[in-house]
Length: 113
Image 1: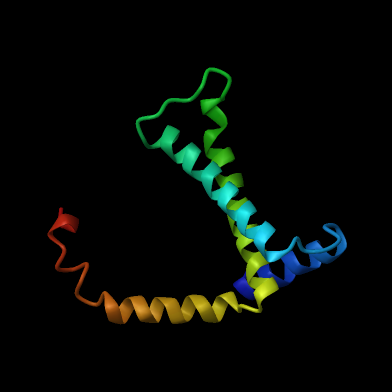
Image 2: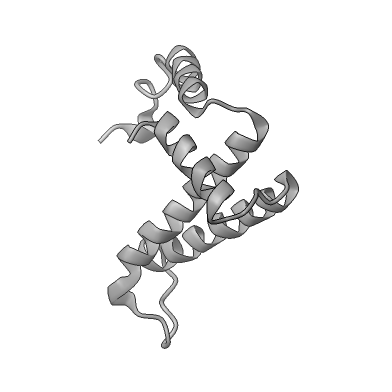
């Protein structure tokens, strides 16, 4: 699925099943909440924090995928609401990074193995 198709699919879902978009500020708060849920799982799966006894470590990978999808969904909602073409935005962002960081990462001693 392309980013354009994702944006169209989310818009269709919102306008049929979801009834309407939440306002932009509400969606921004929801995005922060969803990013926090990704961070919680990352801290337990890849960081020093352990799972609580009630949490199931076995399903953590599926949970992480679901939480990342939630982040993407809300981000797409915000893009749709604000008239952002994510394909164009990402292409411009990658071009900016390629110019800005052309030598930066290659010369970063911290990244050498």
